[in-house]
Image (cartoon, rainbow, N blue to C red; front, side, top):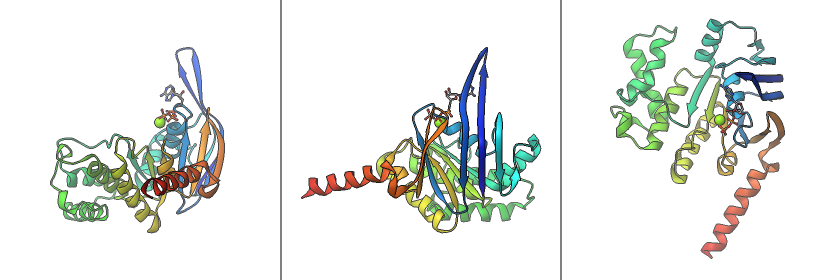
Length: 247
Ligand SMILES: Nc1ncnc2c1ncn2[C@@H]1O[C@H](COP(=O)(O)OP(=O)(O)OP(=O)(O)O)[C@@H](O)[C@H]1O
Ligand SMILES: [Mg+2]
């Protein structure tokens, strides 16, 4: 579904060139659940932005469902982004003056789908129900907890039934209890067939994914099934520690 070959991204700031991605090869299939990890500045968000069609690579190929994305113009990119990709960010990115329902519904207003108002509302309500927020639809963001805000953002991201759900540190602003709740929602979506890519610093989050891609200085350091990645060993150790502590 996602096929990336020799992907490079160079940012120019004044006379300086920053090589954010230095030849990344990556293939992600339908219904995978992948964690992208790596130190700050290793290129995780840069990679996500390119995969999400928010940005274009400097060099290399990116094919999404067999279509070369690198050659698309801005309008085609915007179309692919709308139709195929859902985004979730650390900072939720909700509109403060609009209630949850309206926040979820808004992308449909701007999409080409031309749905009428009541159909849009029904779809937004269904998405909020999927993330367990049926009882908070008329709350504005400042009337919601962090976890509830992130649920609204997830509902908004899945509204168009995107082929890929991209989440950049979705639990970065959440406590561990709420993190577990949000991971539960991702697990549910994955079980329903969703392809999910999560950027995270937390081993605990990566341990809920099935594959872990680690970046270092713009290159892939490792790409392993979770059972072979350090994240699973970390979680196993944490569980063993907890069991010891309660004994
Ligand atoms: N718009 C930009 N202009 C110039 N340099 C940038 C830009 N965006 C990112 N960079 C640089 O590219 C490199 C990779 O940045 P990126 O945001 O992808 O890292 P990251 O792995 O997501 O880090 P973090 O964990 O802190 O979010 C960094 O050195 C960063 O300073
Ligand atoms: Mg980042």
